[in-house]
Image (cartoon, rainbow over all chains, first blue to last red; front, top):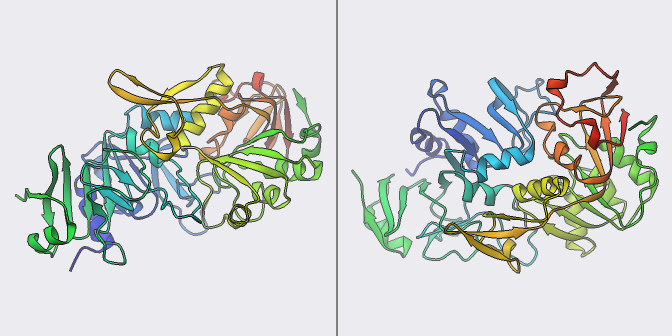
Length: 212
Length: 217
């Protein structure tokens, strides 16, 4: 079995160093929060102006003035801080965030990320904070399924969707493999229920086996 | 600084063709009563600058639905509840300028701070930098971005005093403090207007120098 969404989130959470300042993107990356050890000292940043964001609000206890980037009602932890949008994005652009975790449509072998726009003629482009996070965080983790619903790989020699940022991704966490982006191409760090040869065959790009 | 008796008074005199800055991230910080007053006031052919392009059927979405907006400048128009904007856009009835969220914030900050333009690393090598001037600085490529200023800013804050000093509440702060610096006329809706001296000066986020009109709703 390839990893479930929850199990994949646990793998990402495992690799976030204690004490990190972290931004989790909308969608799948949000699940990582559930797997962070409360004693790890990891501080969550949300782009709409908050550090030390807590879990989603309990039903009945929602506060419309306290939401996350996905507009979901959340809570504050002791030590939380609020700030305006220019400060929030200075934290990204200025290199103050240790890690961000983003979803992806495609990632290229050199770490180009496409995650904001399909480029389809009827698509409504919406970028939000994706470009700022991709160029700003010290380490950019991508969290996605390895293969799209039609079976095509999301890890590709060249992105065909419009880029979010070139050469920004450090590590790619998927349901079947974790890959490290290096100057010399992609290294396979771990596999989840797939043979190395099968993965290499389906990805149509050079891989290096770096499993411990 | 005027303490207005109604949201309608706070948006008086808005001209057709105005650039209107609207605070809020989704509905948090959205000045719904001021936007409703602007619909009643009747100004049209507006350019709206806001993070989103309306949620549900109230606030900014209602202004769009009333056909008053020619162009939206925002970072994230497409959401699960942005059906008003989506319909107008697909029918070719509204222009869209998509701006990365941090660039939107910084362009507003620059607009309020008298900065002529700035170089940002965000968007380099993407569709959103096409046609823009770029420059390499210390080995990194940057794109030139220009300030945004409005004729009118509509802001949702928590409390004001009679000098226009503002405090905000939680993540409803978002674009409010930036937009308050970047428009000719700044109108603010708050839950309460308190007496001058009743806000802790150490806690004031937007000083009253930026604010023209407040109304309690």
